[in-house]
Image (tube, rainbow, N blue to C red; front, side, top):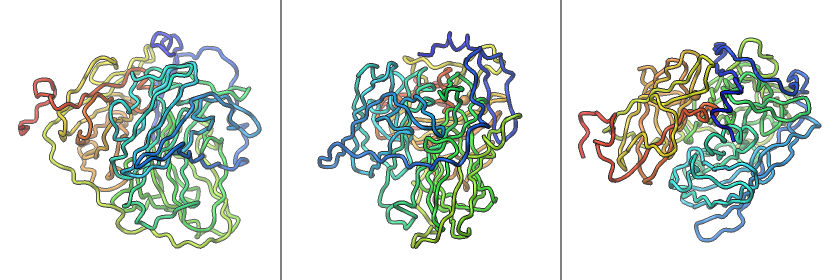
Length: 503
Ligand SMILES: [Cu+2]
């Protein structure tokens, strides 16, 4: 268990950077520990990138599928020829995939065999409070279990699940407690996108190892996590046929930002983001992914000759002195022969839900101590407290939230539970197209930036959290609670001040 007091003692650097801007807070000297594995000595493109295992239900009854997962330690071959101890769902690293369908319920029984508490959050899921996996709703270590019910009363989306136990989530996620949850619906199924073996989820993250091949976890340790993993392998290769592929990209890193691009600089299509497909495909040469975010892309390999290779590279988050051939590379594609391809990416992918009219406005300021003297982090000047409700929301309300990053060096990454929101503005400029124009549940704020978001809080009453999804920051306290209720009143909402609000 990480307590704030211990965190202070570690004196680890608070670091964060975006887009190679090299923004780095002066570091306090790190404590002595086992020597690091030099990331430049890790062989690249030697292991095939595995596909995450699709979890089979233990039962199907009526409109419900039942799953069982065991949260347990296991050894995984992340580095070629070596085993690393990790925390897993069902012994899998990364965790398994649940394939779900809108309108069909999923019930997951999680049993925690670890020696630390866990709480499993379905990121992006519209779920009742008791299945949200909130920071205080813990599964006891040593065999405790909890059953989560996911109604799937929401459109298709690339969701993922991960630990959220307060002050433990950062280390639990870092040590492996993530899995994917692919929710589909008729809108998505009726398109003719690449499917089957040509529809490939890829979970991205970074890690730091010691010389014995074991994970090194230190709070706030962004810059030393220089080994990049795709589906749990360090710099793997992936064989592709010369045709279109759909890649569902998940940034499951605690802190790392990616700007993903192909090594020949060529264009591909972005078709989706956090909350499912965009309204229409975008032609891009790069996708930006902050921790927790997802991007759905289509790459057409038919333009390459048989036997060619290209690298999915990363131009985001590089710090001065970073080994560019390590943190600048994710995986290698090896292009094989042609294969039949009847898939297509239509000009219109979906109709996004109507925005609605907001009746409440609120403001949130994200900040943390950037001096390196403490590891305190805040929303509106307060660190997270489990039993404090920070924001009272009337059930069914549509609200606009103005969120500002008050820090000078450190990016943040704002995530709201329960809802998919829309990004209305970034630094005062309307967001009407581009990768942030779809449904979102996580949004990046570079130092000094402000975004304006809109969400409708309906479906469930209850208490949920909003927080920075740089998990080291949320563990430091950059998290707060909101309560959705039918009895919330204007008086309870200190920041509610929109003049047009009427019951
Ligand atoms: Cu943050």
